[in-house]
Amino acid sequence: GRVCSPAYRFVDCVENAEAPTAEQVDQEVVVVPPLMILTSLFHVLFEEMQKNQYTHKIMVFFPTARTAAFFSSLFRKQLRMQVYEMHSRREQRERETTAARFGHDRCGVMFSSDVSARGMDYPNVTLVVQVGAPGNLDEYIHRIGRTARAGKGGKGVLILSDSEAVFMDRIKDLPVQRRKDPALMHQSDLLIRATTSWTADAQLHWQAASAFASLLTHYKLQKRALSMSDTEVIQTANTLLLGCGMLDQPPISRKLAEKLKLEDHPELKVAEDLHELQGLEQLHDSTLREAGRSAAKTQRLKDQALAREDLGVDVLRPAR
Image (cartoon, rainbow, N blue to C red; front, side):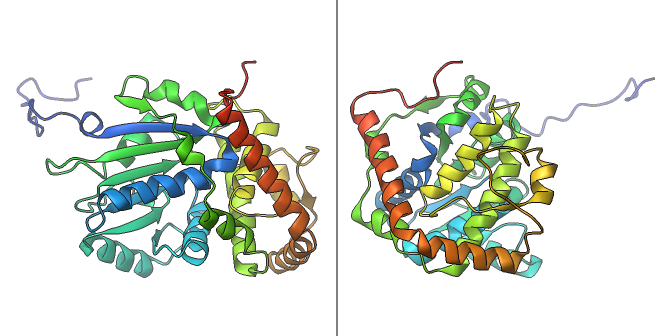
């Protein structure tokens, strides 16, 4: 049957001369080992804050709410950077207050899950950073649409782990430039201190464990789209958080492992009836015992990744 009557009128609400938002935004993609996600994010933020010292307004999107929560706490506690926190695990009133404050502020940084990707109009956003591959092209476009509004310029940076590099094929028709800059993987003294000095912070350990479980779920759901194996799903989630200072892979509940069909994978730690408080105590005790050895191992991995970059070795996943 017909949807419209023969005499329908078409009303175009966008002028022909107005370019799509995705074409107005200066866009870059950065591909790094998952161990260097935090390091690259820090440098991208610092660059923008130096460039627009009094007018920077930055939105950073993370793949899950728990990951946004962990990074928010990590930046506030360890890097002394004041960031707004916006995700679905916060109360509605808290989200409304945060949205109002960030929208009113002349400059600021907001860490968010996808809850801010649509329907939110924050004025004068200068930079949108996406950590990890979005679920699809529309999600990528909606996120960068938070900047370059009302005729103003803006910039978007997509930070991918090398296991997510296949997502670049989805944005190949957009004006996105691949950025290969060794400076984004530079380990400053500040970053080294920030990632090696929270061994006794139980809250950060619990948030890291929660982020790990949520990242496993996220990558498992994106496994086919990103051409990731189960081993890469586990390693990417684990190594990303090791780069943030997590000392060892935390266990996940058998219920979650079975839901993800990973219960028998040899690289995943599975605990029976893992209770939140029990898991926190076990994680806290084990991480304190392993602090020195694991911190040294993480630093060695970072040094190896930097050495590979210096030698010009392609850090992308080898072809199958």
